Image (tube, chains in turn purple, yellow):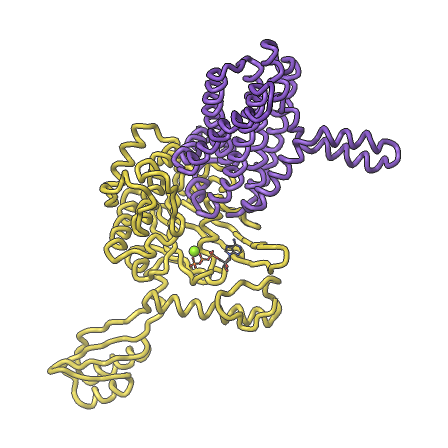
Length: 261
Length: 344
Ligand SMILES: Nc1ncnc2c1ncn2[C@@H]1O[C@H](COP(=O)(O)OP(=O)(O)OP(=O)(O)O)[C@@H](O)[C@H]1O
Ligand SMILES: [Mg+2]
């Protein structure tokens, strides 16, 4: 109940912020620009357009999640709006979870709106729209679940600028985790310590490239049928995302619980 | 919630509350509260006084769970403040309250009502009522961005008493208000008390405190330097005594006048101003020995302001003496003014 009230209020804050609309227009422009890029390259222009459009949506929603998420908790403390909230019979984790859910709801609505425009546009252009594309969009949402949790975690412990830097760093490194594995394989036997450190790093970093099935989705859509990845793999990715998110939120709640305002 | 209050339990009890701030790695620690003990009886209006930086806000924030005390405990109607359920019985108004700018006044109260677990109909009824009562009826659908300080202050009080909690904690509710606004808040506090609510508030406006409080606590650099019922605290010391007498022969008057700081007469009536009760008694005897009649004897007590300044000074002296004996706490209290050569 408390979580829901705070989530709805957080969502309301985002909806009433005009900046969001400016950004949304920007996102739409990005989608349409993907078409222009498609024209420039020969052959398979619809495939490229689909691929770039998905990437534009992914990047745009990630930017919004990170920017809003890293400011959110700090703003409540800085403007002292949380004094009149936390002084009520509400637990600190409820407040944090409410803020998280509110932001996730915001991301979901933006993602849904952009996706709707994008899919309509694809159809109009005669590009194939299949379940594989929906799968890719759904996994973008799962990735945002995790990225938003990271933003909230840093935001509940430090300043917006630092939080944004950390979240972007992890977001960036998280895209490259497959490379880390390859790197580990390269230096196999010469330096076992280094290899262990890399393994640990790989284990701790969120494997965000797991969520990226955009290329597969475009191929599957071009073939006209089938999934981007098999459902079992999809399930394991979702479970991974959920577990990682829960762990990050738990850590955020522990940090937040001990703070003095 | 009023029915859950058990008889005899104080509205608020604080035991050995201590707060040490650790601002940063290389900044010095700040001892904001030195083991505060306090009890606020049910149904009282309790004034919480102290200079800037005395620790009033720190205490209030700790009581509502915004800060974790370094040591010590507190109970609200017998419920430990570490349990979030204790906050169901408190309304809190922070210093210079601030609200979400994207909400209207009506939406703000509705949001707080939700958090307080009030059903929708009651939220609406109570919200409308309070907005009208606090003179915000004309602005209830206006953006909070356009609210003046006084309007925010009123809304701050409205949100604190929204779900009619039996204890209300207010941090400087009258600060920054015009005389009319101050009077409104004062009357509101009196009305709350009459409705059975306990009000505990910090303030720098001593005349307001003297007007409406039953009890006060004066805090000085994190320590309690005075506490008790207001008439009792101020009645302890007589600053001067004014005496009026009639029918006094010259000699008797002369004797009494020698004891007085000032003596004058208008017509039949002779007036004397004496520095202490002892002197007043002697003067009275002299007058009566001389055959005069005592008409009036008025002891002048300390005002709250004089009392406040005196105990705060005494607190300084006591602390300095303690520091010389080496019995002071290792972290010296953070003084807002000069540190007075205190070692720490
Ligand atoms: N977050 C904080 N970090 C470090 N020191 C703090 C913090 N908050 C308060 N202090 C210090 O604790 C002491 C008590 O501050 P507090 O705000 O409780 O005083 P106050 O009695 O409310 O004063 P005022 O009348 O000015 O509101 C001050 O010396 C202040 O500098
Ligand atoms: Mg204060």
